Length: 86
Image (cartoon, rainbow, N blue to C red; front, side, top):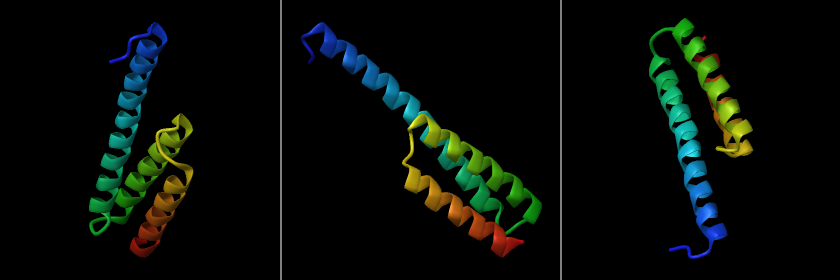
């Protein structure tokens, strides 16, 4: 357990950041799941869900919750999925 005031504060900050990043990653994963489920059904739903997922991925990147290369790779895969469906 932290003893110094500064260490206690750093711990509080790390818990806040952890919760915030977890929320962003969870939201992104849900959006990706929706997009992948929509893939075999209809192209217009797929396009909408892919757009939403990409938007959320880029937002999570800007907040520092996801790594840049992870976003790039995932967006690329989404675009490939969209191309195959369309």
